[in-house]
Length: 296
Image (cartoon, rainbow, N blue to C red; front, top):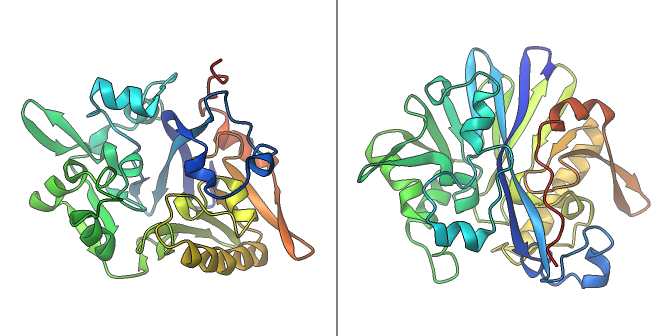
């Protein structure tokens, strides 16, 4: 889909299932079940949606999903399903080979957002996108490189350390302009240096929200934070700033994990906000996988 000189496609690395206590944290089940009904085992689907962006002659990928390095045990733990193939197959359907990608933006270094950064070739781990420069916030890289007991299971060195050794990882020091249409903006809360991706062309504005709001409802309900947010109060403050921005600019908001609403607008509703679907966005979301129904 084109917005002037900016081109955007949504691509998928599959769908996982998580215990609802992860994405919904302290939100009572009767409330979140009105938005997303959990399966009998209390799991909910979470999509692994990534973005392919073309701007100023650059082919840019935002996040890379879980990738291909997972063991059978890890795949089962994630309940990973790829009805349309993984990320590389999704890119191939757009005529994009790994060698065509110029830049990879990692919103943060949790495994479900950067596992596809690298792949295994024999006993070596190499960049999946061999020509690309990978962009991540310096503080995010530092915390991923020195995980604590809570984050050790999601900050996996094989997803980012080889890139630094190979000279492919560029560490950002705060907000950074990538092209005239693409800007990385620090959005702390989910992690201390989580970054969203601000998109603009002419009067149009978009925001790749990533885990500032794992589901669209998290963006509309400011106080709803996930159990994964390391700084929940900071996440609430960050969302407050971007809620106002989104309304002011009538922005398209892109949600990476939401199986029901991948793109939406925010509109004020009294002291709260409501989500509004965007009919024009159907062109973007048509190829995304539909999660399997809950297992009995």
